[in-house]
Length: 263
Ligand SMILES: Nc1ncnc2c1ncn2[C@@H]1O[C@H](COP(=O)(O)OP(=O)(O)OP(=O)(O)O)[C@@H](O)[C@H]1O
Image 1 (cartoon, helix red, strand yellow):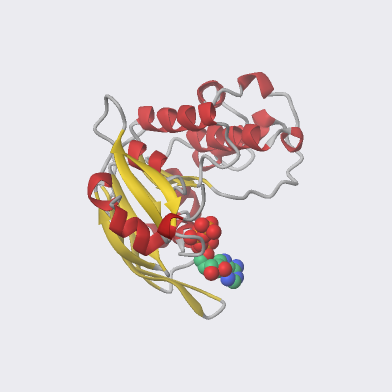
Image 2: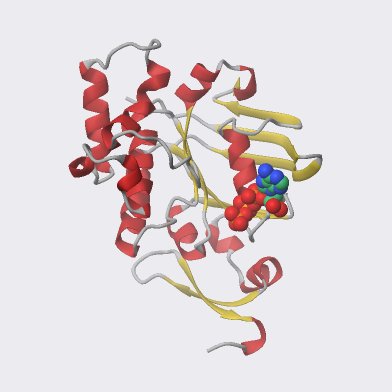
């Protein structure tokens, strides 16, 4: 059973090699809600998320989970609270799919403790939900990009953390699996923060969007308020025509290069 809780970023700054990459970000994800981070290439989305799953230290600011200061916790406690589906994972792990997913149980076990019946049940459940149980005995390195992505999602689900961080989770996935992954994540009821390039998926699956540009939040609000032709033009440099998804109160963008260029 996963406890649902909230995630708060207060004045977060991240510096890489002396260069400020994320500057003064305040961001809130209420319990059980899904927040999307959108922005052009290099705007700092992954860097911000890396600070949330503790792969990059903060230069300034605070990140709290249910009020607990994430960067003051032990790595084990932090991993009990935050699970991540990162954009890139070292591909040289010579492990099976089962072993990769079972790594999600690490923060819940003593070092070198064998799997309990509960661990086995949780990992099986995660592989089933991610649609990759049939691959359990395959070597992880032999999988396709989309299969790897779903195994990494299974690992994150097996971690049973109340906060799920997704960095471009639909990378490598075909259209059906894009919807399936986001439907699955939504159905868990977990608190989610996700960087998404596809603005229409962001509109359909997120309650609230934050727009990053040059490491700063330039706008945030519900998808309806954020995905306007003006903002899309200013931030992404493309023209947008906004329609509605049939039978759903969700904006849908038809995008074109600026000034009528292109098809
Ligand atoms: N290890 C690093 N060393 C130097 N610069 C870095 C490093 N990691 C990120 N950067 C720079 O920080 C900026 C933000 O990168 P980041 O990956 O956070 O952006 P992003 O919004 O996730 O981009 P994308 O949409 O292309 O994935 C970029 O200019 C990037 O080149």
